[in-house]
Length: 111
Length: 114
Image (cartoon, rainbow over all chains, first blue to last red; front, top):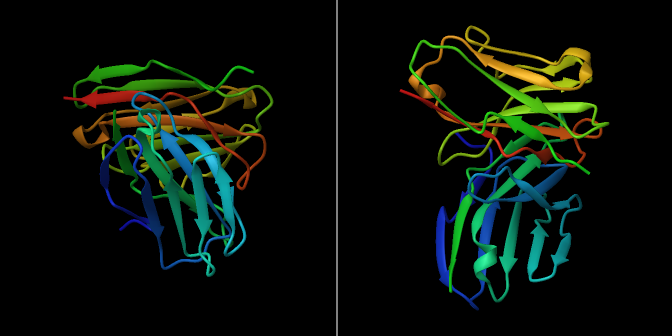
C-alpha cells in the first residue's frame, strides 16, 4: 500500500490545455516535494512545500500544499510537449523525515 | 557542477547471477541514497549512507542485497543471487546533508533479470 496516492495514473492532453495532478494521503507530512522524471533519467526536483496552505508558482506550474499537510496538487497551465514526463510527489513525515514516493502520474502532452 | 554518475546504464543477467552497480555522488555531498524503482511505481529507498556509515537499511533485502560506501565517496550496490522480481531501475541520489535537503538523482541503472 502506497503512503501517497497519486491521481490520475495517466493523463494525455493536447498542447495548450490545462491539467491538474493530485497527491493524497492520510498521513501528515512536514514537507512535500514534486519531481519530474523523463524516460531514462532520474527524477528532478521541481519544488518543496512545507507550510499548510502554501502555494508556489514556477512559471506555468502551480503547486499547492493542503491546509492539513496531507495532500498536494500540481496544476500546469497551457501545457507544452516539454511538460511530458512522470510526475512524482514525495512526502517527508516529521517523525522520521524519510521520503516516501507516490507511484506517479504519467503526463503526455500532444503537439 | 557534475551530477550524480551511475554505471552501467543497462544490465541484463539471468536469475541466480550476481550484479553490481556503481555510483559517484556530487562532490561534497555527505548523504548517499540507493532507491529501487519498479515499473509503474515510485522509487523505494533501499539504503541511506551518511558519509561512510549506514543510516537506514530497513528496506534492504539483506539476504541478497549489499551496499558499501568506502571512504565516504562513491558507493556500490550488489545483488547476489538475483531474482526475477529484482528487475527494476536502481537510482542513486545524493544530498548535501541528510533528510529535508534536496536530493539529486543519477540517471539510474536499468536491470533486467531473465
